[in-house]
Length: 169
Image (tube, rainbow, N blue to C red; front, side, top):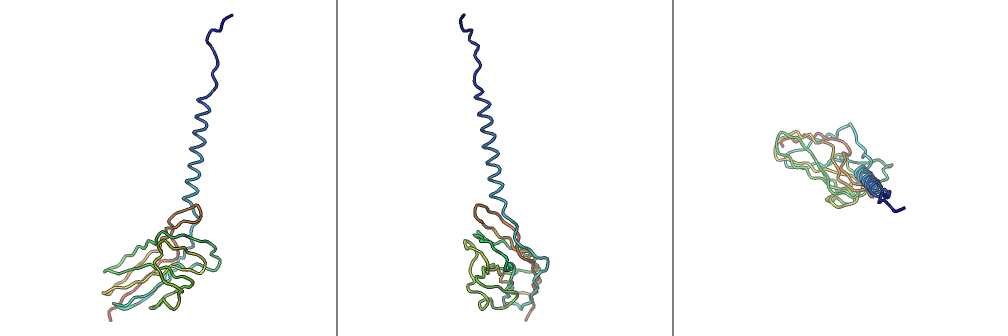
């Protein structure tokens, strides 16, 4: 008897589809993991400060407790401020120290540096320098840190909000 040409072909297409589905699922899981670092500590109690026009005040916005055992590679610090006049707000990384509210942060920090591109770990804090040339009330939201931690990266709110009153001299 001769072969009539009917042959069962291997399920090659089904294996390719299954392989593609597995690759897509693994890619989705890897992306989710990379974009889901643990939240950073926050506080409901705002920092309150008063300063005079032309004088800066330094606020400790994110001062983790002694249990903070993470190393963050900072890509930046986002600050959102609402004020009735122009107010200058500059974020700093305070190395090996912390500030609550002060007019001079240098004695309380080993270094006071631009946080972009730096690492943040135990003993460090995020400080804002706030100043204005006119009387103002500034409401500052909790800072948002852009960071990488191991294979994960993200932008999360950290620390507390602040209310700063700038009074005329």
